[in-house]
Every structure is written in structure tokens, then in C-alpha cells.
Length: 519
Image (cartoon, rainbow, N blue to C red):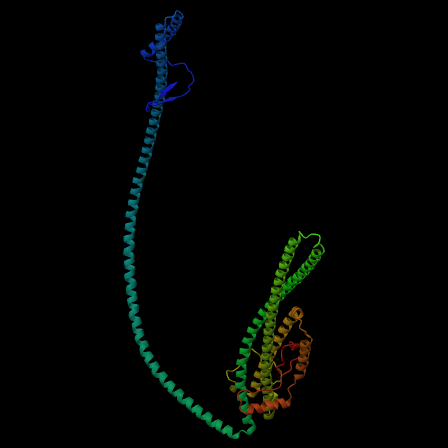
């Protein structure tokens, strides 16, 4: 059936269920309903008229029947629209009732909030009045306390100013007294110097030639000892740097060894591959010559295969040459690294030789002081043990302030410390060399075998170097000490001693094959 929208005049066709039409309240609706059976009677009459061939009447009746059907559809549509409007009206009334209820409820809540806020405002006003009163009271108390404190501080400032004036007067008097004391001390020092010079002049006149020479040697030994101490510190710093460099070089050697082994494996693999390819090419050539007469049509294909094999062989040979070049480069780098290690070892042994010279100088100085004490009759007062002077004892800034026996103790202590330090260095180096000797010897053997260089000559030289180093170690004798004392008495700043102090066998380290004996 056709429905009309109240706001839109367009028609839309919808299918609706046939329901019994509700009773219309108006009289027009009752008239329309009562006419339905009459329309049906007219239809029957129309049929009868058609049967009697009354065409005009039948046409009019059919037109009226169609008009009545249209009116019935419009009536049903108006009823449905009326019902829909009634439902909307009921819904709007319910919504208005809900909105009215919500607004009244919201107004009641707002009224309660307003009342609560007004009560809070009154409470805050009361609290603010109380806080204002408390603040004014506290401000008055603070001002009173500040006035009292200001008065006390003013009195203290006046007292401090009086004290400051008294201190300034005292400082002026103190400056005058200090100037007087300084003048008196300078006068006393000048008199002491004069007395000391007089006493030294008298003492020098009484000393014999041997005592004067001993004093000169002591002064020279002190200066040489200071110089040797500075040089030892420099050598220690240099030795630490060399140790670090040796560690880096060992790591580099290990990396080079691994790289060389890998390159050797690759080269061996490529050589086998080239050999197999050569054999395959030779077999291909033989097969080509055998079947040349039987398969002339395949000659071009075989030629292409041979050409491809030759290209592959050339490529493999190029790769093999490149690998051999890399191997030679690695061998050269390994030789350079080994040269650096040998140079570091040579520098280390040179440093140990200089430390040997320092120990020898201390030994000569101790012997000379012992001889001097024996000549002067005080040799029994100085013990001969190296532990006569302990490290915790107080040592004066200058050796001139010490007696000859105390100087001997100090030199013995320095000799023992340097000897122990050198022994510790040698022991640590021997342990490191023992741990790394197997890897280094294997690496050297592999590199020498790769380069086809014999090692018998070098090993023989190293053995000879050990023997020469063993024969060159000479024990310091009394003649050597006498020669050193003569050099000290000539006035040279740094004597050169040709002999070496021999360490015990437990502290000796075997020299490498490339190192030269520093003796």
C-alpha cells in the first residue's frame, strides 16, 4: 500500500501486514466503513449488467469501484499516520517529563552546592580574620625580638671594634719585634758561618791527604748516586712502555700466525684444485684428439669447452698468485714484528746493563766507605748486613749530614732494593718467555719453512751468543774496585765501568738469539 510521509510529499511503497482497522472516532470514518458492502453489491450488479450486455453501466461501475479502492487505501494510510503521530506525541510527553525531572533534580543539587559554598566562604572569612590577627601579633613579637637582637649586635660590634684597635696596636709591636728577631738571627747565622768556616779551616789543616781524597770521593758518589737514581727512574718508565709494546707485538704475532695458517690452507686447497683442473684439461685434450676424426661436427663445442677450462685455469692461477702475494706480505710483516720484538729485548737488556752499572757503582762506594772506616778505626761500629738500615728509618735530605757508617748503611739499602727490583724484573720476564716460547718458536718455524730460509745458522748464532754472554760475565774483583775508585777521584761526572755484576743463576735470563750481549 502507498504511505505519505508528513514532511515529505514523495511516495514510498512498503509491504504491511493486514490488520483489522481500528474504529475511527469521527462520523466520516463510519460512513466510509458502512459503504464497503454497498460497493461489493455494486460490483455484483456490474457483473450482472455485464452479463446482460449493459456496457455503459458496467464501465461506470468499474470506475466507481476503482475510485472506492483508492479512497480505502488513502483512509488506511491516514489511519497509520495518525497512529504514528499519537505514538510520537506520547514519546515527546514522556521525554518532556524526564527532562523536567532532571532539570529540577539538577537545580536542587546546585542549590545544595551553593549553600555549601556560601558556608565555606563564611568559614574561610573567619579563618582569614583569625590568621590576620595571629600574623599581626607575631609581627609585633618579631619586631620586638629584632630590636633586641639589633641592640645586642650593635654592642658586640662596638666591643669588636675596640678589640680590633687593640689587635692592630699589638700587630705593630709584633712586626717591630719580628724585625728585631730577624736581624738578630741573621747576625747569629753570620757568626755561626764564620765559626764554621774557621773550624773547617782548622780541620782541613789537620786532615791528611787520604781523608781529603775520601771526602771528595764521597761528594762525587753522592752526585753520581743522584744522577743514577734519576736515570733509573727514566729507565723504569721506558721499560714499562717497552713491556706494553711487547704485549701488543705478541698479539700482532699471534694474529699474523693465524692469518698465515689460514692462507697456507687456502693456498694448498687452490694448488690441489689447479692440479685437478690441469688433469681434467689434459684428459679433455686427449679425448678431443681421439674423437677428432669421428666427431668433426662437435669440434667447435669441444673448442669452447677447452677455452672455458683454460679461462678457469687462468682465473685460478691469478687467484693463486694473489694469495702468494698476500702470503709474502704477511711474511714480511711478521719479519718486521719479529725485528721490533728483538729491538725491544735489546733495549730491555741495555736497561738491565745500566742497572748493573748502578749496582756496581753502589758496591764500589760501599767498599770504599768500608775501607775508610777500617782506616779510621770505626769499622766495628757499622754492621755488614744489607738490613742494617731499614726502609722505615728516617733518611736525611743530604748525605753530608750523615756519618760514614750511616752513609754505608744507606748505600747498602739502595743496593739491596735495586738488586731485588732487577731480580723481580728478570723473574717476571723469564716466566713470560717460558709461556710464549712454544708459540713463537712454532711461528718462526712456519714462516721460515714458507720462505724456504734455513734456521740452523741463526740457532747456532744464538747458542754462541749464550756462551759468549756466559763467558763475558766477570766477577768484580778488588782490582776492578780500585780502578773504579781511581776514575772517581779524577773528577769525571759519570764514570764508565767496564765490568758487570753477576747475578745468581736463579735471576739470570737467557738472551734471545738476535740480542747482543751488553757486556
